[in-house]
Image (cartoon, rainbow, N blue to C red; front, side, top):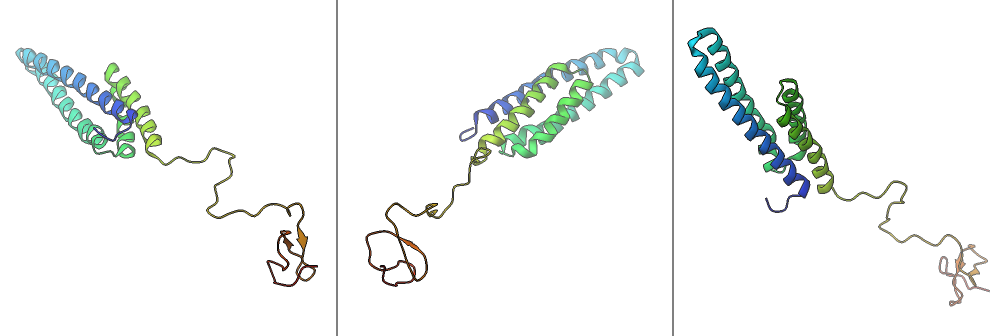
Length: 164
C-alpha cells in the first residue's frame, strides 16, 4: 500500500504468509478428516478441528490482517500477539513465529508513524524567543527600574526614563 511505513508492509506480509500457511494446514486437516470418515468418531473429531481452524483463520483475517490494511496498527497489535501465542501453543510453530515478528513490526510501524519526539534530556523547543541569560557586554542599567539596556539608546527600554 502507498504511504505505509516499511515496518507496516513487513507486518502485513508476515500476517498474510502466516494465514496462507494456516490455510494449507487446515485444508490438509480437512482432507485427512474426510479420509478418516471410515472410522466415524475419529473422522468427526478431525473434521471438527478443521472447522475450528477455518474459524481461527477468519478471526486472524478480521482482527489482524484487515486492521493492518486499514492502517490501524495499534488495533492489530494485541490480536496479532494473541494469535501468535495461541498458534505456538497449538503447535503451529511457523505461523506463530511469523505472527510474533509481525507483532514487533507493528510496534515499529507505530513508532514510525508517530511524530518525532525530542530525545531524552533535550530541552523542549519553545515557541517564543528566550531572553539572554545575562546583560550583554556594554549594557547600561536604568537608575529608575534597574533594567539592562543596550548601549545604543538614550532611554530605558522598560520604563522610558532617560539613561545616565
